[in-house]
Length: 594
Image 1: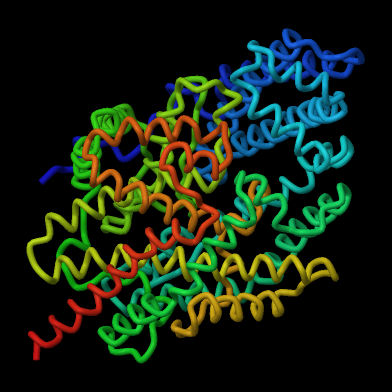
Image 2: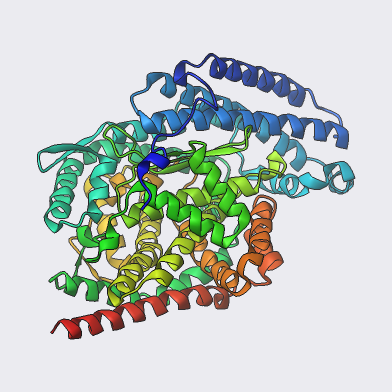
């Protein structure tokens, strides 16, 4: 068995900017970036004549460089804050990078408005230019979305208003301590206890968190209301009434696609409710208690050291394809992963991209469980997506959340499939099926509940402030509907500790996970059919993910129409099979025991 000595559990950030938040290189980098922004801002403002293709290429190249420079600094600050949320220097640079991003967005908005006001004939000639070939999708998207761009005044307010509230949430959450069995835990560590093998610890952790949220719910209600209020007013200022308009546009997805996916999902609640009922019965409960959902099956594979996990990931990524295998080796050996289980870290696993150096960093608190392995590969899947796009023009690297979750889920499937193939007993198979079905339940039930809550909350927020007591009611109702009544002791404070509700960059960061999950399942079926030859097709799909719509991407690389329910039925069928097999195996093992 591999040991942790071969794999470092603490990442290397000095290769990005040496010296942490006191880095002179980081300081100089920020100053250079700011100077580039000011220069470009003047250039765009002075434009009055018709745009020429060479001028536009120059501006786009400058925007690309600035975008990548901001991303490099912001990712570094986020990494520093993940490992130490109290790092004041990192807090400063995150704020500075947010301010630079707002200035960048303002310049971008000016450019979008100029493109929108370009005469159609002039625009067609411009877009047809060979010089702009690789920018065509982005330029057309900018022209189309110009009408929903916030004004200059609103953009200026976002750094210290809208985004600041989102950042305050992260800092506030990272400062919270929870006591379980007389020991202090960060929120991230306490949440990880949901998968502890001891049921009493799972319950005590749950109750400690509930007590904490009950005491703090008023403060979190203020944060959530301010975020949603700002967002709704921003939408109103540009004539947007439907709160799904922006998230659908951000995901480059048609409403027909979302409706087709949800329609399939809503029809298949019963198999997953049955899985929850069977597992609850195995625990001696009539219904699945929320704090037992992540409980591991009674099997020795529930524990795994980090070194063993890293070796498993390297082995299975290489089995999928040479490129993915080499990527995993680089990530582990070059210190791209921060996994140490220690107090004081952020609660949220992340993958941070560093486009200027073509690297990523993955952050998590590795709990020594198989669930932790899946969290690790989920974030490494994001990192591999970044790796696949290294050769892509910087302006075409911005892929939507739905496709980001495709890569992360695909990586999980590689590990789950390998574990299932290696299973030697029925107990092992049940254990792996349980892990797979947890992900199905999260995507088809939990995320559906989040979607329902967020949609209903925004509708109520239009009428005024929504107090914590009402947020609890909305969350409870959403969870009841999302889980089809199959969950007991419903976690009504999910709206507090679910970070996705507080992401200013991505409202409705829920359905993209389900999209990515089902798309990944379709991709995985093809991978099994084609073997290692699929890796090239997979990487081509990832490379195109920043320069076409979701519908166009899937049609080009898979030949499928995702506005039709038939596409989503294929991935769902695999999950239903898992549920049926789990129920069968559970009954068989119960019969063997008696």
